[in-house]
Amino acid sequence: MAAPRLTNPALVRLEKLIQSYSTVPLYPGYVPIPVFTVVHSLRTFIAWTQATKANGAYGKLGYLQGLFGYLVTSWSGMTMSCILLAVPPVWMYNAQFFLTYVAAFTLLSIGPIPDLLCQIPSEALAILDGFYRTSGAIGTMQLAQKNPSVGLRTSWLSALVLGAITSGGGTLVLPTFGLAERDWTLRTPPVLRGNIWTTLDLWAGSAVVAVYAFLSEAHPGLNLRLLGIPATQDFKGRPHPWFSEAEAKVIAIVVGIIIFSARAARSTNPPAAKPASKAKTAKAAEKRHEPKEKIEMSPSPAPSSTSVTSSSSPKKRRRAAKELSKTG
Image 1 (tube, one colour):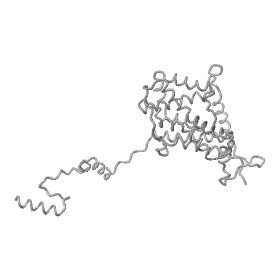
Image 2 (cartoon, helix red, strand yellow):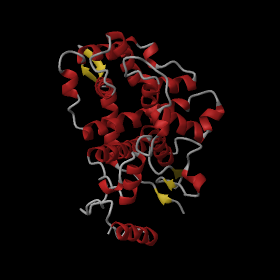
Image 3 (tube, one colour):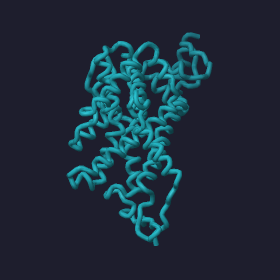
Image 4 (cartoon, helix red, strand yellow):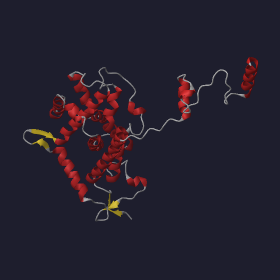
């Protein structure tokens, strides 16, 4: 028998708060831009500034080159997903959206503002990352559900791939083409050569999409009943998803925030490096053509030409004894 449906009024209220945050203008009547967009433009500017500092290009890029790199940082994931879905990205037809990011880059680049923004703790930025990347990945999956292609609408693989691209598009494109450097170049994407933490921007998008789809049954290919887990029931006894789409979205956002916060905590408190073993140190010294005595911790002096050390072989000791007898 199916379990009773889970309903949490707190999750519903949180989703309404998120919805209002995504639509309410920053200053009605004067700045009709949603707070959601303004904060996202601020977050991506910080990411762009940190990337230029890491590559030694901070303050050395022209305005147009810097603006282009910033816009790629802000929109690359959304743009690549829209290309795969054969729909135009919002920045191509919404002038207000486009000019918001141009104005944000222009104003935030003045004076010491970039340096001040880069001092924001990584834990706070991780919360924004979890929120925005999860919202973007879920929004792309919902957009794919309106695609005329039946295969695209029903394939679980397409949902996970689109989630990964939307979440980690900037992480994939920016270093691949060296956009945060003075001279662009083409190289292997570092994210493809990393570990679970450096690839987190990609797989986190797939993970939150799976959480959202499984809990809300919003995708036919990501359904708990396909895994043998029964659905819940509503008050009339009809099969029903475990959570509504609004509730599942809040849960997925919380999961995304936890994932990105875990990486931020790890980067803030990196694990202590293990001390190198004596054998590895000696091997490294041999490669550098250094004597092993520099690696040994014992203060034993170097043997003279006429002394017989305990480390010599018996044959060498007999030969040395003969030499001593001849000289004696």
